[in-house]
Amino acid sequence: MHIAFVDSNPAALEAVRLATEAGHRVTFLQSADPLYPPTEQNLRILGAVDHLVDGLATTDADAVTAALAARHAEVPIDVVTSQHEMSTEAVAHACRTLGLRGTNPDAVLTARRKDRCRETLDRAGLASARYALAADEAEVLAAAERIGYPVILKPPSGGDSLLSYVARTPGEAADGCRGVLTGLDAVPAGWHGQFRRGVLVEEYLTGPLVSVELGVKDGEFIPYCVSGRFRWAQDEVVELGSYIPSNLPPEQREACVSYAVEVCRALGLDLGVFHLEIIHTERGPVLVEVNPRVMGGALPTIYKHATGTDVFTGLLQILDPAAGVDAPAPTDGCVGGRKVMARHGGTLDAAATLERAARHPDVLQVVGFDSYRTGPGRTVAAGQIVARFILRGEDHLSVVRAAEQILHALEEDLGIELMIGEKD
Ligand SMILES: Nc1ncnc2c1ncn2[C@@H]1O[C@H](COP(=O)(O)OP(=O)(O)O)[C@@H](O)[C@H]1O
Ligand SMILES: [Mg+2]
Image 1 (cartoon, rainbow, N blue to C red):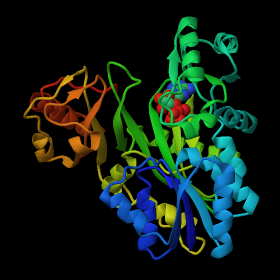
Image 2: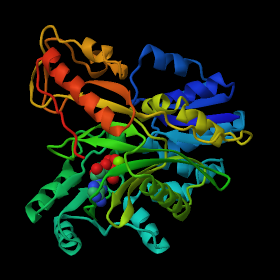
Image 3: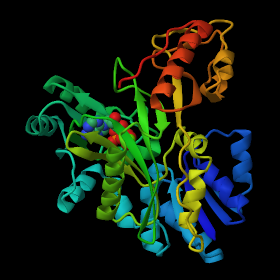
């Protein structure tokens, strides 16, 4: 097939590599300011594609449409995908204008607007959270009063957990509102348009947060996995990593998958692999958000260790009109990716080392200092990620126990206090 990728997050470059390796014709539209670093491996992947369009504003619908139209006229494109959340809207517009095959444009555009997504769930009679879209502080405060504290404030089309706040009082809601409306410093310029759509005020859902990875092709749903998140015992907003499979009892896990299927059906998400974040509340699964792309961050690597298969192989089977789709592989025990995070600001020991973590029998992989631009003698800020390790255990509890043991050893070896202890 001729597959066109419009930009990518770092993890999904693996899909580009696999597509090229499988002999597909690959077109890649690259941003002037990519999310992935120019490592040797990444440059090799991008150097191997058939056609590279460079320096494109990949979040701009007109630019993406023009680039895809030109390429399609040269060599017909079989499918277009974006694995960069902020480019999915531009791709939806382009597919609609050019009639190219990809995820249903209307579904992508609804998924990317968390308020419209909730409206769709309400109409379909699916579980959701109380919500309101507010334009200013007065509207935020009125909505929070109506919904009831605590509430979550967030941009309706955000990403990367940027600018999400929990507000327990009107004072906190006013602060959070200012944060969403004016705090764009940490947000790349090309994303500002999508971040400026008001403030979404939502009922605060309580319960374990899981993600369902759901493939869809020809009306068939393929649940690749349900993953859980490690959250810090002292402050549950701090995410310490993820693990596969989730720790929910089997019937709750199945309820999350069935609910995820209903959500995709209601939205019309018909082709691709989608990442649905769900909180399993007392009244059952409730959607946090649905991302019209594959899971990012360390999750694809964790998935590979947990199942021995690559989720991006699944994505390519789904996107390739001529391919069959393999059933998801079972998981072998529990595999977790745990961040090593500094508890306070400080300085790493001059002899700081990750050796002991790497030698631990349960550890499969250590992502070292270089990846986080730190190392012996370097200063770190509170909450900064210093390294990451991936480990396997028989079950969730043994992973948590082993991680704790490793982190205590690392406190000695790094000379700083770390965030240790998970919320159950
Ligand atoms: N309604 C909600 N109730 C409880 N927690 C929420 C709610 N909405 C968001 N969150 C928390 O905030 C985080 C970020 O929100 P999310 O909608 O996933 O934004 P992003 O697109 O930035 O990932 C979630 O991972 C979850 O921990
Ligand atoms: Mg999210």
